[in-house]
Image 1: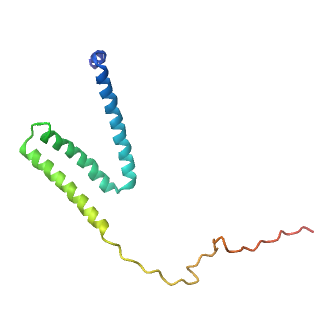
Image 2: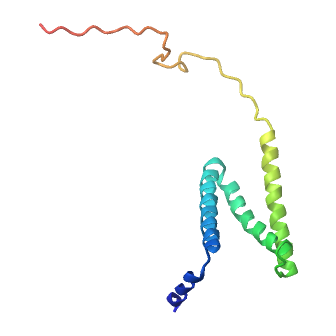
Image 3: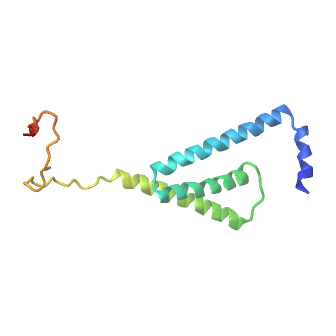
Length: 132
């Protein structure tokens, strides 16, 4: 019966409620930045960030909080973090490489726009047809 444990809420101190509200605000901010990041980067980069987040949390727990772990889990976490760092390094090097410059082709009659949209061009106004 989980509903019976709701009576524990009356024992929460004002500082405890402050931490609960702060935690909710942090979660909302993290979700908001995730949506913003998803619009600005590729799907692969976003998935790497999402997965790296999980391994950063695991590594933080092992290193700073003293959580117990199996050596194989530590090696797996280190490999995942190194893989994410390599992906980030590779993407940044890819952006540094310049794309080849493509020379514009000569303009001909077919590549020119049919309707000229320059503001300085005068367009002839058609006169209305008069009814007889």
